[in-house]
Image 1 (cartoon, chains in turn blue, orange):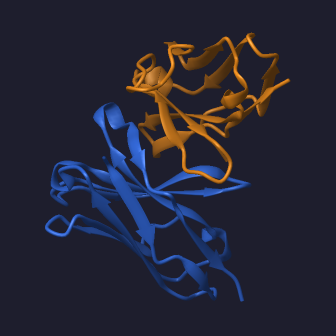
Image 2 (cartoon, rainbow over the protein chains, first blue to last red):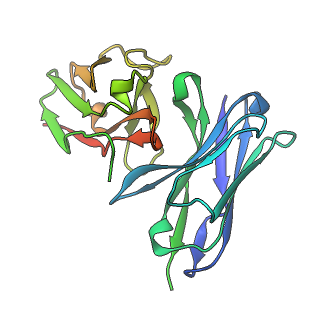
Length: 118
Length: 110
């Protein structure tokens, strides 16, 4: 069974940093592109970052470019999101998702809450 | 704001058919990219419901179907059931911003 489990969320002050992790199991992690997505009640679902299976291609949403860094450890089946210079508008539930054919998100983690507040 | 436009809510009685529209632009749906649909029960993660316009993953009931034409797509639930109460999102690749989602449509079973 495919499983994705995010961790690392929490409360952080504006300007602070936080690192999220996503532990993958039940599939050949190194063969799949992975994405980070986030969701808020006001802005809905938002794509954050993409990383290809071999880390050759990495993309970021304009809203996080220069502040967030996505990486992965294929040997450990893990995906990471390093977030710096956090703003209140970065507050959201963050999901990691596996990318299937045609860009569909065929598996999602349970999400981890990030709250940026003083 | 969302790049794909969905109605905020739709409702229907059990057994009725409801359709959710998803309107995009020439940089996403109109460019020929596939549309995917997700179902989200509040408090849980979204779940893939329809992929590549009209395909159901294993385990998704056949009362769910999708279609796409031009710059729009739609999700139809034929024979609405109480367990279908959820929020539904459409999603597509976009030439400009890479990934776009709809704002979500809440389905209420009357």
